[in-house]
Image 1 (cartoon, one colour):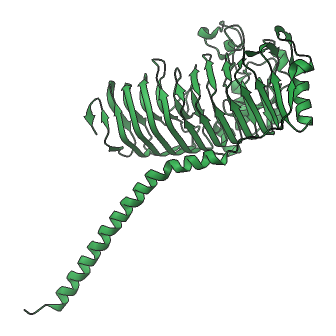
Image 2 (spheres, rainbow, N blue to C red; image 1 turned 135 degrees about the horizontal axis):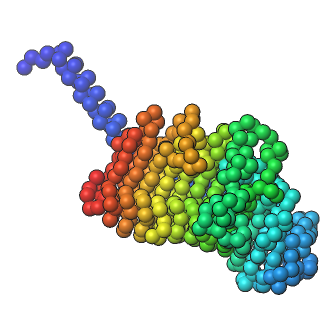
Image 3 (cartoon, rainbow, N blue to C red; image 1 turned 180 degrees about the vertical axis):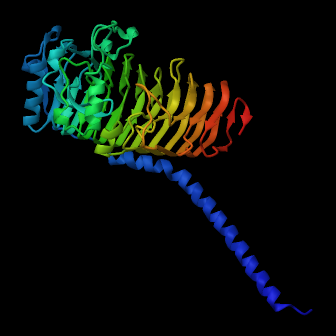
Length: 477
């Protein structure tokens, strides 16, 4: 049989192209599988990069420096002397033994492990003057000079707060909380509160005008509440085992920090803005085996508000959350709303989220005043008992304190949920509100099963969600 050579050559070329294409697809599929398999290996590497802190075997008991465990004597100076002596000796453990110890703010120093023994309760003073002079701190993503956080460390290295005792901020409806402006937290009409012109609006204007932080002075005469524990520009930070309750404002707030471990901590605090843990401008953070029962977000990853966030321009990145129990709160793990410098590389696994007062499991919130970006969020092995609003909530129109429209278009992409079981999904299984100018991109749900959601999906201005073996209300997607 005579063979037509030109046709044969053409056929061979076509077959070769098909073979190469097939193998390329197989290879691409394998690469994608490898990426999905290995992604949490990156989380393990982040955890491994956070070293186990080492302190000299020296102890400094606050009793030996004059502290009195009667719940009434102000022990600020005694605790300060113990910390100073520990630091001067090259480091060690400052021990607060069993008993009730009243104090003003505690300022940590390098190589000091502040350790609460079983039965120890540190009561923070209700006298606001005790938190003066003002220090370099922050309020809702903007830096300022304000009341000292209750526990504060500024530009220190190798610091820890450990033990099994309790830090009680003693905030409540008659102390700190009324300044939020809400009647349910004790605010009385026509008394000063944080939204008054001399408070937040003044701070916003200063931040927008690039007023030096040293000139953004608040404190006495103003109504901006202090943080509970704030390591500021610190490296190698450990917060372990202790309980925080009755916080004036955000509870655990590592800002501009590197290598932070928060583990076996309990946050039980239901006041206004009582976020559990808010890493901000921070990287290499491990939040492990903690319980959050809060008046606001359980965990909220942040990176500055508006112009101040863009001025600082330090993304929060390499954050691992695992083995945690989220109860009450606006969200289980949240990114935003103070997010102007961006958030990336967030890993969440092996957590339980369950409460009729837990609004969302995973939440991303920003707007065109905040701008910023959220990318590379991986969530795996989550058991959700009940949420109010949605299992996944992405909102690029988030609004608080009035209109929130500006010129900074946010970007949200690469959000991946896998192996998640939800018994009661709230109003929506998934609720996404992107923008026409900035679609939410590359959202995947793999082996996600959501029961009892009032509405399966509400998705606007988003690329199509990629579903793999996912059901909502029994419907396969």
